[in-house]
Length: 437
Image 1 (tube, helix red, strand yellow):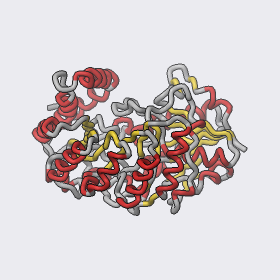
Image 2 (tube, rainbow, N blue to C red):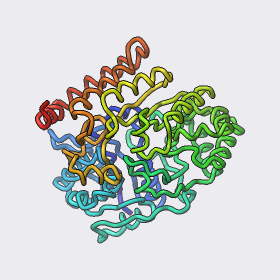
Image 3 (cartoon, helix red, strand yellow):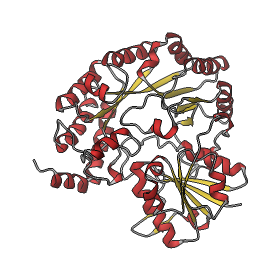
Image 4 (tube, one colour):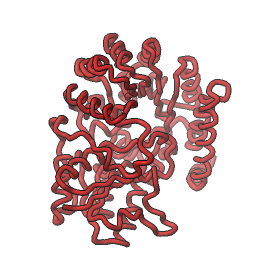
């Protein structure tokens, strides 16, 4: 049996990573391996640094492992490659496996730094990937047809147990039928919405509560999209009187079902993170969101009426956006009393239709993956100068989290923006060199 270390690389700067939640993929795959007899550890680079480039020092756990499995998102790809190359230099005997959304669509690139790259879902192939040392190159994972067969994640394999996640992660579904232009979820997990049985989820929640967990976050991209299954789950939480609270990501259409909203409230849903995306009707159409500005308004209002807070997520910089759109978005958030907002700069992730469109139009001016985190301009907008969009992005954060309206968040926001500017001096200088006004 092998000693396996999963690595979750950090981005160069994560403005949205306060809760530092572990990746569900690492937890599920690691648990499968552990149950098969392997010794497993998950290291989160965002919690404690795995590799110090200046001192050329790797985490000590890497020096005694047989296999390293690295899960890559686009914004963490450069860091992943840096760590993998350092491992190869110091301990070439270690087998390196890469997977995750970025590796799925940039497999040839990832293979330059690994022995094996797994595309797509890895549950069906992870045992072969670890056990068969002769398995190299690029392999395609298969979608898990029955999510109930995946074992409950074992949190004990997370390193740094002294700094546990602030929210307990849980997942009830995979897949997305909506196919938004900027998103790679539907191409990665398919457009068929696959569900765990409500009783299976309730069994996991019961187990977590017995372990002392009380605050949950549902990792589903579209929590509640299957109304009937979600109602059974929520009713089960309420009937068991589990004394938990939870937050979840959902679409605006979740508020069309009054019974579902009441059950969410009864089950103690405290926060709903909603992909509002834009208050520009043309932008919503170009994003293929299948929602209107009126849907956005209704969603915020109805969730508030049922006692749930709203975290509105917006993507700024579409071909239909200009500087006034950004200003109008912040004004809208204040008018609608959005409890918290997340403004991101639109960025073309590999695997999304947006990436293919902008790449074919030669509008992507950098493929420095560290910049693909929603805080950097990486393509040429149509109605804004790149520098204008970059600065207006920061203006949106500071204007929404104003001292008068949100004093605590104001201080946090100013700290994050100040830190971002310090870390990204070279990125801003490069942007100015490329696009002189």
